[in-house]
Image (cartoon, rainbow, N blue to C red; front, side, top):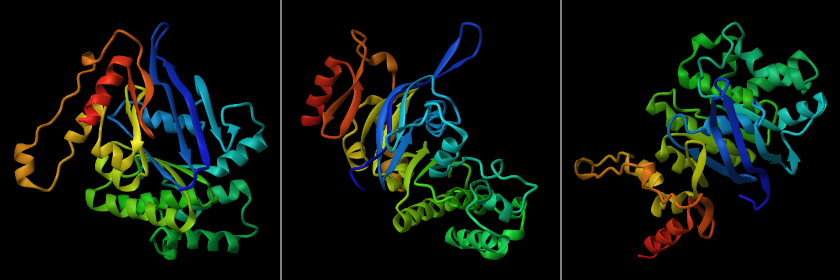
Length: 310
């Protein structure tokens, strides 16, 4: 992982109107950076805003407020069609549902080649087919699969097709939006290992969105924890697991099962109560240790520091 910032997210907000006077603050002022060649994990329970964050970054949603910069360029600024096309080539997404994200009427060849066609990356049908076959083999499938349809594949194979489609245009940054949540446990590790292998070979940068903390720890260099639209903690993967600070992070970690019957019988799960927080001031994102950030008030910050030093 280099020290070059590939993505800079500053005070990102994504609010949705649900009625004349009602607003859902799906993402409510989060800030983080992603560095070239790293995997940044984004975790939290369903509805916390992590997938909305990914979709706002890639501009599937226009941000309500805040800045998203990719290689120093404003993602949500006014862009021409040519500029948008160039941006879309650099940033791709792997979707959560490998069943709904593939067009059942298209062959695998045409699904994967769609990006090649849009961006004019091949000059003839023979080159187009060769590129698709190479991509299929790169993600662990056979080139003979190119002429089949999505319904002929298992969930894990369909997700590999989705990964091949994302890689087709040679992106620099890939948002993996819960890419394993719809898969069997036995297949999840295969897909995550594939992503790690591809990153090692080609230097991809990932935003890996998931709710499975154990899998996120396995693949991520750094992890951000979200709760109700807010980033509540951010740290290196090992640091977050060894020294969690925010009570919500602790509750998530306490719920991770381990293959140890004695441990599981005696494990104490921590519940999170938002009402326990100090309400005397608005919490801020503060650096409690080098590269370890937590959302807290001044009073909580002092208490957390004492706890870490015990």
